[in-house]
Length: 362
Ligand SMILES: Nc1ncnc2c1ncn2[C@@H]1O[C@H](COP(=O)(O)OP(=O)(O)O)[C@@H](O)[C@H]1O
Ligand SMILES: [Mg+2]
Image (cartoon, rainbow, N blue to C red; front, side, top):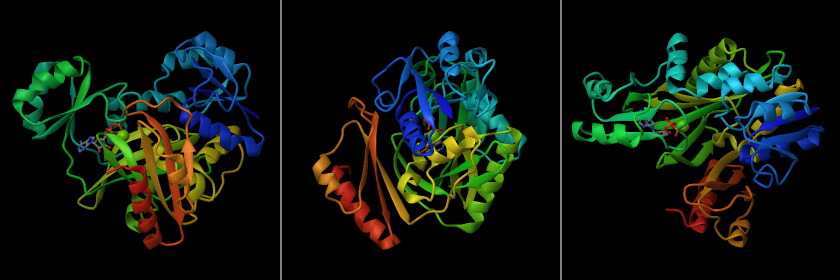
């Protein structure tokens, strides 16, 4: 079984590492042969928007998948005309455009933040009448880790936000005064078998995921989230891992965005669940039975952003798992993460404080 992964970032690296024990061989397509993924598996060197290079990868493998969301869908389709691509490119095309995401939520009656499509400054100037203040202006395409969006607090700031985002097709979104941010990860096999991980609670700082704590235990919310993902999996005839980010506001879920791939808020599953999200994605796309998704303890994940803290001090923390992605440090860049899994919630909170102190993060 050979899997081709378009993009060789840390997600691809962790997919490859999860595939080896199952006997799955991995190959990447990436412009960088020595990046995060390239350090653990062979790379077909090429741009991810080059159909001929995608085709070169596809010919060497049984299934093509991706670790990055901005592969142009037409190029992907052209480069994989005779190949199996999982998850389906249709899911990718929805995740690439925030308007498509909102329309998917609307079609399936899944609650989401109120929004207006924005094509001009005039549209944007009308948005606060419908949405109130503040509003979040989000570029429809290519945003991630809080990039490609602006919080707009007053009429005077509208023009600046529009200009700073590059006057591109956007969405204006109403501000959600959420209590928490949660995410749910589902996996669906090629035979339609489906499994859900427990909800995870996420804290973002400056739009970038900072910590994940899992499981978030609330039966009613869990079952509602599972219902929403089940609708999306069926609608998209999905195969592989699907993640949905939610806001919890007034006790109710509102979908924020979808990721048709393994997700940063699921990194805790490597040590904290029976089967990791990475292994389950690999199992699903090559047609193997799915593994159990039960948590094995209480998990806490801290992202390492910009630079790595002192490795020796980190590793002195009892039970700590360090993941260094092998990336060049750069401000705001995700270069690693740490996970703790404990037997009790109390112990998790003690260890998490210790970790945050050692990592030198406020
Ligand atoms: N409408 C909103 N109301 C309140 N906070 C928001 C809203 N939209 C986004 N955010 C905050 O910004 C973060 C990043 O936004 P998101 O839409 O998930 O984009 P990205 O693709 O960058 O992850 C969210 O996780 C949340 O913390
Ligand atoms: Mg997000």
